[in-house]
Amino acid sequence: MTVTRLDVAVVGAGFSGVYLLHKLRGLGFSVRVYEAGDGVGGTWFWNRYPGARVDMESQEYSYSFSEELEDSWTWSERYSAQPEILAYLNHVADTLKLRDGIQLDTRVATAHYNEVARRWTLTTDGGETIDARFCIMATGCLSVIKEPDFEGLESFKGPTYHTGRWPREGVDFTGQRVGVVGTGSSSIQSLPHIAAQATHVTVFQRTPNYSVPAHNGPLNQDSLAVWKANRAENRHKERISSGGFLSSNPNEKSALEVSEAERRAEFEARWAVGGFAMGAAFNDIASSEEANALIADFVAEKIRGLVNDPKTADLLTPKTYPFATKRLCVDTGYYQTFNRDNVTLIDAATTPITHITPTGLATTEREFAFDSIVFAIGFDAMTGALSRIDIRGRGGLTLTEAWSEGPKTYLGLAIAGFPNLFTVTGPGSPSVLSNMVVSIEQHVEWICDCMAHLRARQADLIEATQEAQDGWVAHVNEAASMTLYPKANSWYMGANIPGKPRVFMPYIGGVGAYREICDGIAARDYEGFVTAGPAGA
Ligand code: FAD
Ligand code: N01
Figure (cartoon, rainbow, N blue to C red):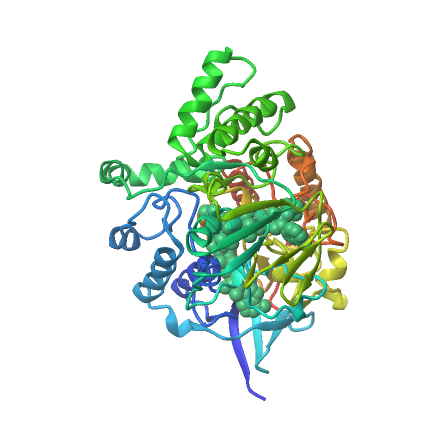
C-alpha cells in the first residue's frame, strides 16, 4: 500500500483550499489538496442553479492577498454570477500554478490522529492513505446539501433537482409544470428564472424569508475606478470592519433615537441602494426587538407594494421571527415573480407536504401534478461536511461524540482533543455572518503563520486546551444571546436539520474584533494552546 507523506493535508478546494495551497507552498511545506468534486471552486462549482450569484459586491467578494490577482481580473456585474466566480477561481488556480497540488474526484473518508507519531492518517474513498503532520479542513460551511427525505421520493417518475447539486449542463424547464420546495436564498434567486421558462411553477413555502432588492447590473466603471484607486485602504477597512465588507455602510445611530421621518428616509435610501445596506440601516436592528420591528414593518410594506394579490403578499411576509435573523436574502425580481399567471404560492406551513407521488407531490390538502421538482431546501450547514468524515482525535474520540451537544471549538480554528487539526471558518468564528472571502483569508493566514511559528521552534504539536475552548464557547454563546438571532429557527441554529443540536454556531462579535482576538492570542505565544515537540523528545 502506498502512503502519501506530507507536511499538510488540506481537504476541500474552494476559496479556502485554493489559498491554503498557495500560501503553504510559499512557506515551503509539502502540501496536497483533496477535493471531492471534479473541479476547483467549492460552492461555486456545485451551485449552478439559474440565477446563482453572490450577494456582496463583486470586487469585495474576491481575494485581496495578491496584487497580481487584483490587477488581472475585472468583474462584469455588481453581483457576479456563479459562472464568473467559478471562472475566477479557475483563473486563480492557473495564475498561481496550483493545479498539480489539487487532487480532484477524491473524497476524504477518515482522518485519525496518531498520538505517538503526532500525525494524521487520512484515507480517501479511492483507498489512498495520506500521512500528514497537519490536517486542515477547508470543507466549507455550506457544502453538504440537505437531502430530500420525503416519503415516496423514489416513486416520482420525473427528474428532481437540488439547487446545491445542479446539473452542469443546466436544465430547460420549457413546457414543464415545476414544483419548487423551499423559499431560502437559493429558491429566491432561481425562481424568477424557472418561472420565465416553465409552463407553471408551484412554490411550497414553509417559512417566508426577508428579501431585499439587489439592483444588480453591469459594474459601474466610475465606482470601480474609485475602488481601485483606494484599493489598499478599502481592503484594510474590510479586514477591520464588522461584516468584512464596506458596501453595507453601517449606520451608527439607533433606529429608536431618530425621528420617524429620518428613519423612513434611511430605510428608503437603503432600499434604493439595494443589498445588505438594508441590514445595516441602524445599529440596533440585530439587538433590539423594537428597532427590528420597525424595519420588518417597512419591508412588509414593500412586499405589499410589489405583490399584486394581497393574500399572496401577506403569505410572503415573515411574521414568526425578527428581520435578518435568518440570513437576509438579496433578490432580483423575486416578489414580482408572484404576479405572473404561471406562478402559485402554497402555504406549506398550514398544509404541509406529506409525500411525493409518482406524478407530483401531495400536501395535507391536495395533490399536485409536476413534470419535475426542484428542492431548494438548503444545507447541513457549518458542521455537515466535518460530521461526514470519520474524524478521530486523542484516545479515538470521534468529532461526532465531541460535538454531540453542538460544535465546540477554540476560535473556530481548533478543537481540544484534536491536535494539529485546523478548521477554516469553523463554527465559533464569524464565517457565515461575514464576507466569507475576508474571513477565509484571515483564517488561512493565521493558520499558516502558526505553522511557520511551530516549525521555527521545532515544535510538532499544537492543541487547544479544554479550558481555552470552554471559555471561547461561553463567549460565543454570550455574544449570540445579546442579539435576536437565536429567536429564529435558522440553519445558523442547526434548526433546519432534524435532531441537530440547537446552538447558534457562528461568532457574532464581528470580523475586525475577532481578528484582533486571534492576533492577540498568537502574539501571546498562542495563548490557550499547548505546543510540544519534536515527537518523542
Ligand atoms: P466551499 O466553497 O464550500 O468548498 C469546500 C469544498 O470542500 C467543496 O468543494 C467540497 O466538495 C469539499 N469537501 C467537503 N468535504 C470533503 C471531503 N470529505 N473530501 C473532499 N472534499 C470535500 N458567502 C459570502 O460571503 N457571500 C456570498 O454572497 C455568498 N454566496 C453564497 C451563495 C451560495 C449559493 C452558497 C451555497 C454559499 C454562498 N456563500 C457566500 C458562502 C460560500 O460558501 C463561501 O463564501 C465560500 O465560497 C466558501 O469557500 P470554502 O472554500 O470555505 O468552502
Ligand atoms: O437554503 P435555506 P438555501 N419541507 O436553508 C425549506 C447561502 N446562499 O439553499 O425555513 C418544506 O436558506 C426551508 O423552510 P424553513 C446563504 O448563506 C446564498 O436557500 O425550514 N420546506 C427554507 O425555506 C443561505 O442562507 C445565496 O421552514 C423545507 C428552504 O427550504 C444558505 O446558502 C444564494 C423542507 C431552505 O432555505 C442556504 O440557502 C443561495 C421541508 N422538508 C444560498 N426542508 C446568495 O444569494 C427545508 N425546507 C449569495
